[in-house]
Length: 590
View (tube, rainbow, N blue to C red):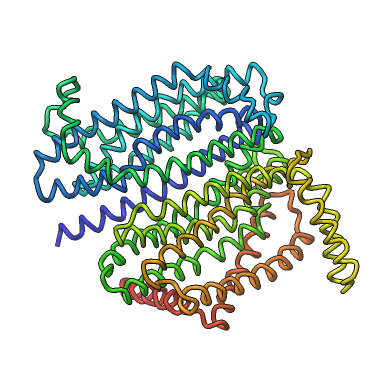
């Protein structure tokens, strides 16, 4: 009985740590926003952060979930601790050696790489951002990149420790490690930037300190389990290359690593394009991107993780597999769609409450809110894509999804260029768009067709030339949303090649019903928002909190009523869970 209670307590501790970690992650961004706002200086930091982050994601993070943890588990339960420790030694040597060599080369050749990116005739022909980068920016970028190149080595080693300890069911410490990283990212900038005046270099040093704490937190517990004598020599490196489990892990990791390489290519392209836009564009995009990931990481990832073992269990039973997959998609859509509606309608107050302090001015609020609204579709696309990818993994198919991911990458890169151009002419086409809306409301069909024809004629010009509007940054958000939508559709088509798993009745029609309900929720929220916006003094924080709370509450109530009217199945499931929770609470109190 005592062991059961201890297990339950450890679960609650882990949940509490994860919640605190998420809160600290948000606080980290709020502090950065307060210190730098959406500034050119912060853009340089995000650009420099891209290179070491890419190294970590491709070499380590991509292989952990896809290959290393499954291999760790297989060896531990079938071969025992000694073989596991030996494999860990060999794998660590291979990965850290690879990371170290690449990091060293990048550290040495950072000036040459930077010079290539800035002076490349091909890139400048499309983007023409060299005139926006000064010699001081050049030096800052190099220094930041070199400082943060230490992080992937520390985080890479620490992530391997995480995989090892999770196989040993030590989830508490592995959840504590990212908390310590975020804690360093919260305290570090306050000391280094605010008190010592170090500028964005203070954030970079904080990231290195956080990476070290991430690693250091896991060492004491790791040493209790790891009894193998770790050695780093040419002989051990040679032995590592002969270890069949190392090659098995690398083989399993290849598809996922290629997918992450593509995703990181998107990040690089968006970063380069952002430097052809107004100062602070990349920062506004990054702040909005972080907010939009909350429902994806919490809802999408949770549903996908629970669905994977269930789908794997029924991989030979098509009917049950179809049921689990479709139920997972519909549940995820039911939960994320109202959040999308809230982000779109309440984008301005949400951004003001989240980041609106210090150097984060009204321009930063407008640009970040604009990005957040256009990222709404991306929340749906990424959520569905996560579940569909798990369906492929359950069927032991890891190569076929790469086709859909590749198409998504191409779509994002092409549209990022075209849409940033299009939105840079925002004040050229917006009056024409408003005119068309007025003509529709007045039922003036003849004039509407005429203006629409003129609008489409000018789209090519707007999409292939760069204007002056700051709203151009919205192109990065909308291109990502469209890319993930296309990726989800292609994943669904490819999955149906394995058998008719997704259908009109089970997949498409219920999704359309939920979207209609969400649209009605948006319309109602818009009018409530406008009503209270006129009545409240929104220059005060408490007024913004009241406005946001009332509008969001109305939206959720209307979504619940709409779900009743449309007879959405997931509402009944959700209500049963709530009633069961209520009964448990009252029984405990009784």
